[in-house]
Image 1 (cartoon, rainbow, N blue to C red):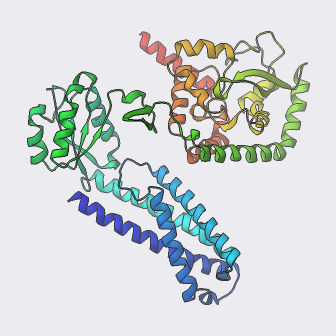
Image 2: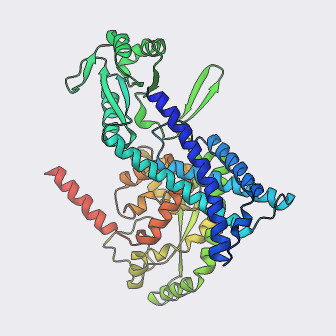
Image 3: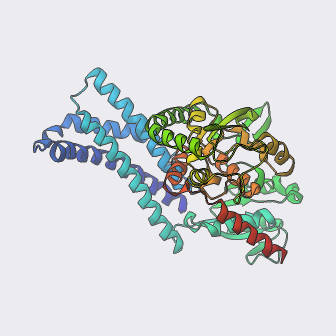
Length: 474
């Protein structure tokens, strides 16, 4: 039943997207010619020919969205993923359409109408999917449109899956029960593996999730065979799920299948070029626009204490290569500048240095590092070689952060972990960023950095960590 309903909803969804795109053209014409142009003859622009072209464009855009995976039936894709696909597909489609229109002169098209068409399409399509997500979340929270899942396994992996579904009620996934070894911690235990055929046939099961612990893997082939025999779609959670990245890549060598455990999206040439291009343009513009501020800070540093204006410090960056990271000098010249962190009560700081460090203005010269390619605007913060050699021996997965360019700001930094704070927590957040990277996530981090993330809160977070340690000791 749920498959038939989903197929029907998918068709309605595509039809609504088509109508939204055509409506966007009508709105764009009215807005640009009537509202902005002060004319009242916009209906002339809505000729049969232009409406036909808008319908053809809508079909082309829907095909592009379908190719990007937007219409694939899945509940686990986040809203940000869908909005990203809409943005990219709409941008590509409007670029191709405008190129064809202006090169081949298929129809006289106002540039203003075309740009408005793009914005209306982007806003209305995104708004539709945001609204749909809210509606389905409410429906599923009240027990409608649920997907009923049978979990094959009763150990740690199985219980973690159930907890994850309870934490994300909006997905509408309901665990009907567990099959496997008896576990007193499970309230909906349905029996052992010998009863699997009966349960798959008797219950209204939409999917099965095979979540075996490592000592149960001798049963995996019989579980897969049972699902196949009963025509039940199934997923597998490997017992090593906690070390698999968010977007693993599977390669084949003959009949052998290899999982790239540390693959990330920035290994894709297209995404890497987009991120690098954005870094170059944004850092170049930043250096030009902020040049008066940079000059004022430079004067302040020079007057605060003897020594150079810029502080150069060797850090470890992309692919473990060392580079000289730039900062405005915030401390008096000392012998520990290349071997120690600055702490929250560091007496080496000057008065002016404390101010620019508190507001992160001391980091602005790193725009030059970004422009050169040593760094990115967003990424894990680079460390001193001494600490890299120490942490790679004591902090799990520490060296993974060097698979991407280090950043001026990052996911750890906007969450308060910078300077003299927990390195384990910082690495955890850095790895989450690498595994879940998207252009939208970078924009989100930059936005939060500019609007609140530039204030250095390391003192607050250091105090919180101290309280946590004292609580554990007591």
